[in-house]
Amino acid sequence: MVDIFVLSSITEGFGNIIAEALAVRTPVISTDCMGGPLFILEGGEYGDLARSGDLKALADCIVNRLISLEEINYEKLQKRVEAFSVNTIGKEYLSLFKTKIK
Image (cartoon, rainbow, N blue to C red; front, top):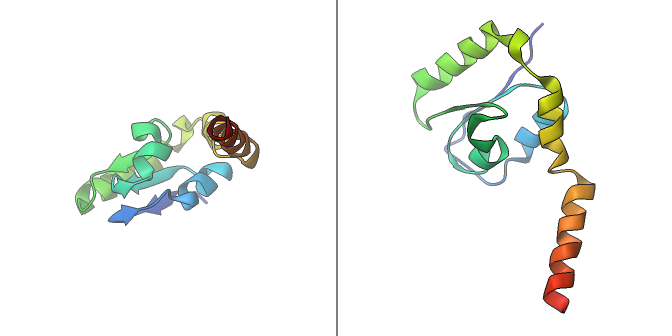
């Protein structure tokens, strides 16, 4: 069985579900909608992006991903998720608070 995660939103906030999919080593396909997918997937570096509202482009991304699953670098996906870990984000918050308090 092959698993991929597809997000077909018109707009999306941060998109925790994308980070969660990457965390469990699931390839992501998302619309390049307003919000977080472009940021989380770093413009397509960590997942496939299709223009929002373009159903054919989204379908093409799905088919292409299913055909090329052997090309997925799961370690690379895992490294991207580390940018959103509690430890990483917690340190960023603490640093921000320390800067604002001074």
